[in-house]
Length: 87
Image (cartoon, rainbow, N blue to C red; front, side, top):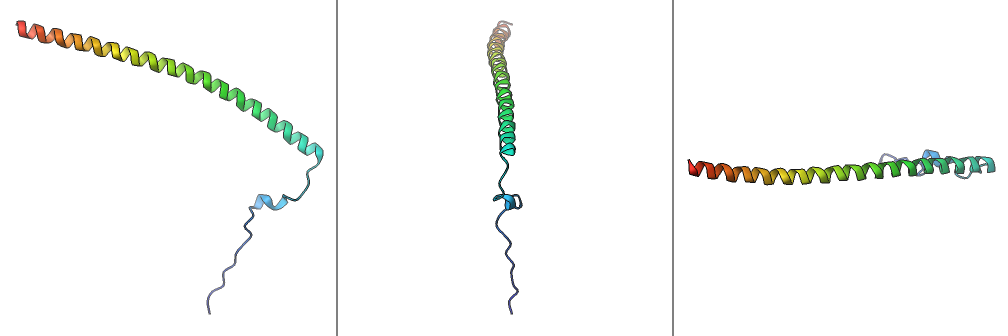
């Protein structure tokens, strides 16, 4: 005889109270809580956008400085080669 298999409910445990009705006050409180949280998140997003802009500007400045240093290094190498040849 084959072993039997038991299959449980497919609904998650938090969904057990789905059909329960919430009071109007609870719905209003939850909506207000979600509005406040949304406003907080929007403020955080704006702050992160400003920070990202500052980081991008610093990265661009670093890239330009790197390019200038590469040019200076190239000039120094050319000068060193010319001095070596003249010696």
